[in-house]
Each structure stands twice: as structure tokens, then as C-alpha cells.
Image 1 (cartoon, rainbow, N blue to C red):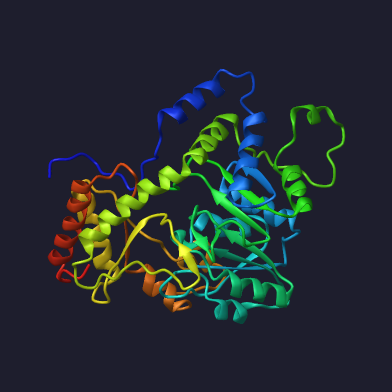
Image 2 (cartoon, rainbow, N blue to C red):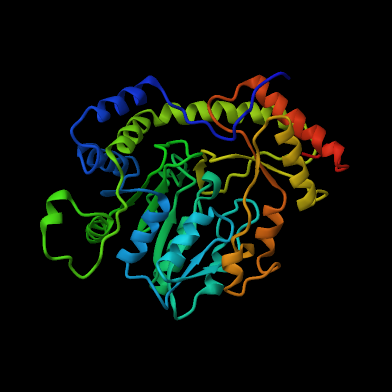
Length: 381
């Protein structure tokens, strides 16, 4: 197939977004203006929460949330080793200790029984993610958090629009953190949002996020030094317009998902995407292919390399947190989380966005199949 580079992600930007950003550029305020407040209100309503606090990124959103909850040095936060590393980093940036617990094999989300086993007198919170768009087992996690007096934080940096027991993600933790960088379905370049029903927590988040211009003349800093972690008017203009189109954006991605499924379902070893019993809808963050047990980590990497040779961007999703250099300093070693390692070693993320067409999907899947044969693992992909 004679084609150009097929990117892993590509934002779904329409003329509406371009017009909104242009209008924001011609306004007298590019920061701390009305669009940020409007985006916060609209996104809170979308997730059925009372408050939204926009931030410069999901990482900073979680950092501010941890600080607002009083979590810091000497405290432990239980998290998944199978997640976007920038989120776990926020725990360390807050001065707390990330304590990893293994995942459920099929959903990739935190396993409740593994969480319970990691609770100590130093545990202050559970950070659970909606992995690749699949909601975590929120009912079980909420029960654990309540029984042990812990904060429950929802990492929704990989999920928007998915539903659990009929409710959208973002509505299950004491607060939920979203990220709007690529490859999120809703993207504004860089940005994040923390949503919550807790007015006091929202107030603390805003206080720590930034100071308004008129507050810069104050001689009183207060007991907490704020971060410069706010969202610009340009990002808010883009994010707000994307939110207004979010149903259309998600529907377009669903169509691509179905095209992929139609191409891969006849190959040996591929099963329908797993959806948990209490999950009513999943909007995938990335299109993931789970390779069979005959594949090794090195053979998976060889397939990724072959795809790149054919101008197809793909990636290993994701490298386990506990095997990365920073976390090995905390004593984690290979073999500590067997389910995470088993899943992570055999997953490939393929291009997934509204601009991938049927011919490209066919080429991507056929190239991956050919690569699996070339490395001697057969056609089981």
C-alpha cells in the first residue's frame, strides 16, 4: 500500500475548534479568563459532578488533589503498576510513596483483593484507573475505601464517556482526574481537569493551582505556596468546543473500532474486547491487540519495529511502572506483579483515531499479521 505515515493518534479537530481558538486569540484575556470557568462548569456537568478545576495537565491535577487532601511525606497511596507513568509520578512529586497492587487480567484495572493486601497504617488513598477506557470495579473499591477510612481517587486520564452501572466515568472517586493531551478523545494540546462534589476540596484545589492577577498585589502569601498550574484561555476554548462535540467524536472512534474488529476477528487467538459485568459502555483510549502466549516480549517488540518500517506508528502499552528506574529504587523487581508483566509483555497499541480509514486499518492488521509470521510466531494475532 502506497501511503504516508499513519500516526498512533490524530486529534479530531473541526472548523468549530479553529474558530473558537481564533476568537480566543482576539480577546483581551489569554489566561484566567471566562473560557476556563465555562469549561470547568461544562465538564463538571458532563461528569455529573458539582465542581471542576482546570489544570495544566493531568499530572498536575493529581498532584494538586493529593496536596489538597493533605497527602505527603510518610503517606502511602496504592496505585496500579499498569498505567500511564505520569500519574504515578504525581504521588512521588507530592512526597508520598506509591505502593503498587496487581491488576485483573482481562480488564487491566486494579484488582480489589490485591488492594486490600497492600493496606498498611500509612495508607491514605487508593488511586484507581479506568485503564484504556475500561472502568475500574468501583463498587468494590468504594467499599474498601470506606471500610478502611481511605480516600478514593479516580484516574480517568485514559477514559472519557465510558460508563459503569449506567454512570459516566469521573463520578466515582472523592475526586477524578482527567488529562487532555494526546491521544485522549478530547484534547486541547495539554491540559487536565479535576472534578469533585466536595466544595472544600475544590476550593483548596483552586487556591493551590494559581493566583488571580488582582491577588498578586497582596502582601499575604498564606500557609501554602501555590503552583503555576492553570489552564490558558486558548486550551479552554479548544477543550470546551471539543466537549460540545464529544458525542460525535466518540461515535467516529466507535466506527473505527468496529472496522478493526471486522478485520482481526477471523485471526486465531483474538477474542472480543473484554467488557466487565458492571460496565455498560467502553470508549477505548487506544486500540490494543493482545498477543497470544506463544509471543515473547522481544517478538512483540519486533512486530512494533516491522510496523514502523511500513510507516505505521505503534507502541508497547504499557511498560510496567515497577520495572522503571525510579521505582526500582523503592525495591520493586521483576516478578513482583505477575499479571501486570504477563499482560504488558504482549500488548500492541495500533493507530486509533477518527481519521483512520478502512483501507488503512486493513493494511495495518495485515502488516501486523505478516510480521507475526516473519518472527515465527504464526498468525495468532
